[in-house]
Structure formats: structure tokens, C-alpha cells
Length: 243
Image (cartoon, rainbow, N blue to C red; front, side, top):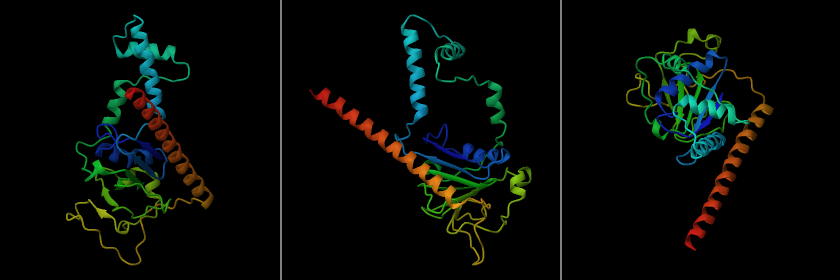
């Protein structure tokens, strides 16, 4: 499962989401999870455009003399007036159910505010770094000061996929800085010469790897073109204001 989003700490880039991404997806059958955060002020995408359309529609409705007094009023109006957008109502019980999946306390992820990539290839374990890198995909490369964190509240016995994994308990990623209490100084764990990275056998063919990388490059190219178009529109508006 691959997630790409902006990085507000109150919504996405926080310890709670790191814990959830290292546990829940495995119960759904996923074998690996990656989450990449865009740089600050560069995270606009299709969801922001959809949200802007809905907000503008609601504004025009209110300016026309109608009232939207409650969230349910807004939901009912958008559901009826938005033909190409599916609007869903999330009950309070659904939110509470997700909150209950979190333990009373979650181990902090040191340096999460500067993190742009979080990866999880086995339950309860994440790797994170300041810059995203796919140079050895589908394996995890040690580039850009890769750090490691293990959560105590995730039991591999509860995840069927983890039970069949070939990962050993003593294998570590090379050059990965651990945030586990077993390494309080933050020094990399010692690794024997015959140790191999503890990652699942993904069985991914070279063709699938190439298709994935082509998709990543296409997405990055689309984002770059969109930012360029917006910058050109901004310059046009600035020139008009100078006149």
C-alpha cells in the first residue's frame, strides 16, 4: 500500500499514524506499506481540487440566501447537488473505533517533523528518513540516514502474514539508526557479515518493478507540471497588479 500526502502534524505526519500504518494494513492482507510526505506548501493534489469545488458550491449556496446551519445540512446539500463527487458521512462511532485501535501511549518517532518517507515491511516496525528514496525498491535501501523504530504494542502473532515471514529477530537493516530502547545512544546496531535485511519475500518481478517506477515518475512529472502552471498563473496576476 502506497500513500502520498502533504505533511501536517495534526493530520498525517505523527506518531499515531506511524503506529497505525505498521499494524492495520497487515490485517487487511497488505505485505508492505510506504507513506511519502510532500514538502511544505507543495502538497496540493486532486483531493484539494475536489474540496475546493465543494466549498465554493456551498459558499454560492449561502450567498444565494440559503442557510447551512449544521454539518448534516452541508452534507445533505452537497450529496444532492454534486453529481460527479461522492460525499460520505462519517459517524462518530467510526472515528471512535479507529481511536480505540491506538494504545494509551505510543512511542514517539524522533525527527518525525523532518521526515518525508515512512516504510513498514513487517508488523510493528517502521523505517523513516528525511528524503524519499526508491533506489533499491522493492527492498529498503539505507540511504539518507535511515532510522528504525519498533512499537511494543504490535504482536506479530496477531497478523497471519507475519507468522509466515522468513524474517529473523536479529536481522537489521544496514546502517539504520535505531530508536529502540536497546540502542539509547542512537548508534547503529551491530550486524554480522552473514546477516541479511529482515524483509519479506515480495516475489516482485522486474517488469512489475519497472511499471511501479514508471508510475512514480509519471506522478512526479504531473506534480511538477501542475506547480509550473500555477507559478505561471501567479506571475500573470502579479504583472496585472503592477499595472
